[in-house]
Length: 159
Image (tube, rainbow, N blue to C red; front, side, top):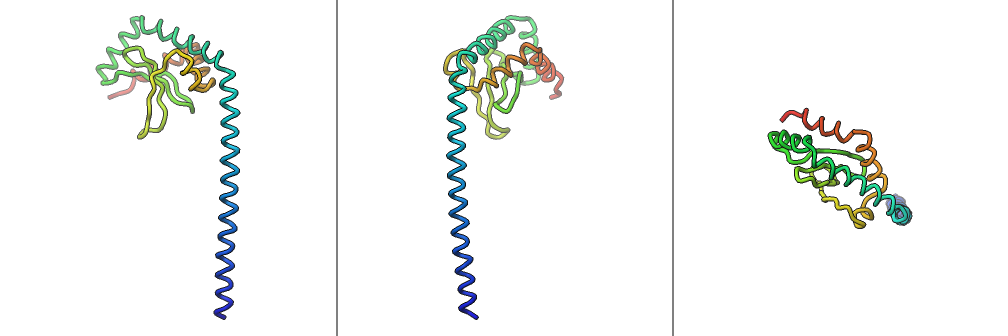
């Protein structure tokens, strides 16, 4: 009886190691596939750099024009009263874009407790660093007027 129990226990131990080995092999395969997919994505993104530069130029042209308007100045007077020096413009799975009272475009990544921010520049490094879909989304939000709706929403918030 004791021998049978020991054999069953050993069988379970062996089964555990087989399952563990299979799981680790699957994890390595998945990591390899993910790495390959990321490599292909960034190869594609690198080919899109000229288009991303064009979108960045359009985004910064909008920003340059907007910061000269009366609405920009008035918006930040109101936001200052609400203890804010930044307004949300656009958000997606890639991050969120805001505009500060100095005219900087700021990209936010992460979640509520671990957010990082980057001030965007209109340069090749920025074009390479961000996804084409992100810049395309920002540009579409500008052209459609959704950025102004986002600003209006900020004004309606109660502090």
